[in-house]
Length: 223
Image (cartoon, rainbow, N blue to C red):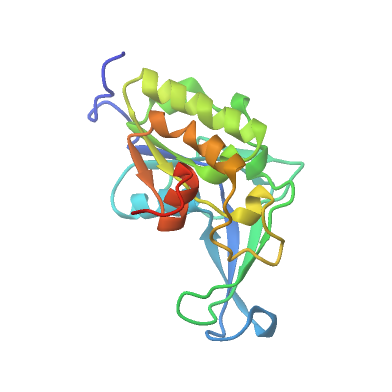
């Protein structure tokens, strides 16, 4: 194996790969989504959120994904790995906060930009410039984005860096729940479990809720 990436030499601490969306949060807290009358814009998608959060904490973070050809802002995150897709739109999510633990959402992700991520978007030198990468579960649901993430994993492992896996399980983004069931957190699926299990051996850190650990492992409980 190659020598580990030197923290002092690597320009980046982490590259996050995958979902990037515009989230519109309903401002009438406690209301049903259909009753919302105004929304506030926020960055969305766990890779985008992680890149912003780690940048705020002082890490040198970058986001690797595709976005539509729109006017978007950024927040101290390296965007060298950001590709503009002129044929697709950035994903959009509508959300409300009805009650504690209840946040209905509708994903507008049909043929969105970030799901078009492909192996040719993964530049070896860019991946090798970081100490670690974050791969995410949703992007293992399509052949092209699956291949892109696995290419990034191979490069990072060969360089001796770290691979973090955010399971990021949204059943309806795997075609297991309807469009109106964006808040559904768990639908058992042998197909999804089999797919995600192939990722686990290459990961140094796995992040997930109880439901996500269950789907990634294929177990019926976490005990």
